[in-house]
Image (cartoon, rainbow, N blue to C red; front, side, top):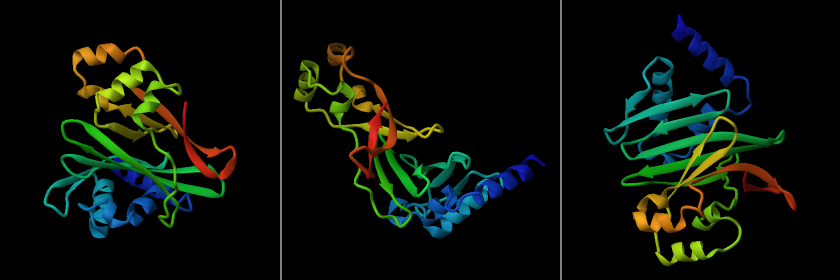
Length: 210
């Protein structure tokens, strides 16, 4: 009975919106999900609805839905042992639908790319974070010291159920104890972001740090 109610809930929420998160996942171009073609994406959704959250993917590994939140238009999928993707629909204005996509790879450390598209999968040119953003707006001696260490950039993004985006500064995990001690009071381990219209040009969008 609970499973039947869950299926009805998903179907009801899916039909509420003109364009919903399952539509976005099904329409996601295949180069964004090399382990999941169109048939496997549909199979994964159907399996999840029927109580099985994982399937064998195109590379004979396991892909699974780790979160499907139709109320907040959010889906998270473990595509492989080291890879995961997240999709979320933002509607910053009644006339705009933005599909946000995160691809995260975790080996010794996790790092992500985040991109934004309209429903035709045309990309928005939205500036993402750099290491400097975790040190604040003003260049400091501590940031210059960090920069001198020439560390690779590892920023991990994830969507929340509050229409925000969390960014973790995972580069800090690569520093030794002494390096961490030198900058820990001057750097933030994570930031919370909002997708906002640009004040000078409302047709453009920016990621604003809260």
